[in-house]
Length: 290
Length: 348
Image 1 (cartoon, each protein chain N blue to C red):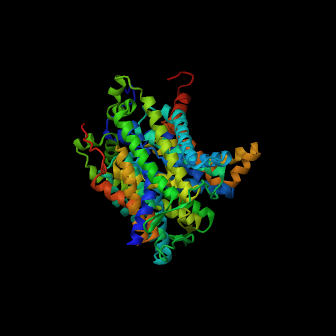
Image 2: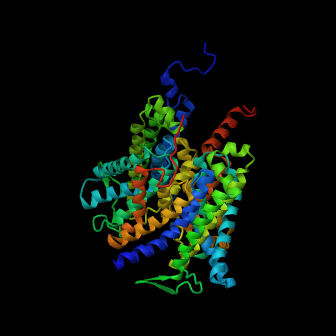
Image 3: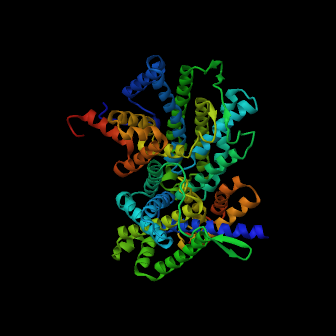
């Protein structure tokens, strides 16, 4: 029972990271209708940049987390302005393939700049243990859960109650009409990319703090895919919650079945989800008319 | 008297080419390719061999993504399946290499059917994710396969003797690749101009409208997966023979990206594009390192220490560059050049 609880709790911590990345996927999909395959790579680049900045500046724990968000958002803005903006109005297939190209470039650049050997991302107090009943958790793991809760709450408010959030949903629902109403699609896209990349930066940095900084951090993007699919590509909050489900599921498979299966558990799950309920648990069902 | 180019039969419209010039040039090209081993050095010959077997795999992806419009990020999964089926058939089951090569097409084709089933319900992006998941599951399954699949160690493959021809020399292997590649090109070209090709293109452009016209969606989508996976599997088997070892590391995810880059750079949905794209992308890292040698300095060092990364950056930039500036790809540029050549000094 204790083993089970431990698996669930550490699964929740990993799942929260997946959730953050998955929310980024959903934000971009909702605002622009494309899947950003470079999400994990933007997280990785932000994590490395934050690490480089934090070690030179010697920032504290809270400041480092904030730095990660800001660095992530900036990277997102730059990518959007230089690469995605000129692709506005192109067919979805081309735009998605551009993000695939972007992903490959970012991934290799990180290895070329910082090398392939792992680094330790030191943040003061992150490795302290907190005892909760029988289970002990690291502060960083609790921090991740907190970050996910904050992000979900923040996006719930932003999308539902702020002027810009409503504009974003309008663009997602019907781009042409939204433009006729005076909403700038380019600005919506820029904000979507900045916030998605900020989330990815947050997730990447937290992942690096807990599990170490290696050039495989980008796999976070692949791991978060199942969460987005499970939650529904157009459901930002659903994706965040589904991250937790995927994290726990993966950990249980890894703990009780085998560690090789752990890596593909999420993918096997999405194959089932896609066949049974392609629009996800919280997504909207689309009806197509010719 | 004829006053222009008119086709009075349907067969005239779908014929591969009606121009004697094109036929003559293709003949010259084939002769040159057959004679290449006598003219080229070892390095150039192995480079040409790589281009040939890469092209077979790329044609597989052309059928799936170019013709049928189904995005696949799991191309490397089929390559791996083909290579492993061949290696297992030869070294574990002791089958003759000819039969093993057939199995290298059959096993991926069967798996292609399995991956194809979800594609019947899914569109574009979801399918890309499913195929991505598929390739990860394949490599995980191979790693978990223990002794039978060689797990992390891989399986050693010897160059076989096919139909009485010994392929162990580089020249013989080159000719074998040339024959297989020519066959693959002919198959794809003929598929495109047959009813299959027209049905795929119709499904790609608008699947609901195509169904209303009587195109059987289930049959043609599955068929696209089947044929694409079979072609790719054969390419994987030949790649395994070339590398003389089949392992998970020999088939990185980068190969999926490389294949996608090739069909984008060449121009989506065309066999000529696939050929031009393969030559361009396979030669790109070599050209780049040659350029770096000229400029020298620290860049050259980067090239030697992280060749894999530099290669990926180049592929990525090629994808982004072509999609951004000329989505028609090399085929479009080729058409422009030909047009300019024919009509010079007039513009059209």
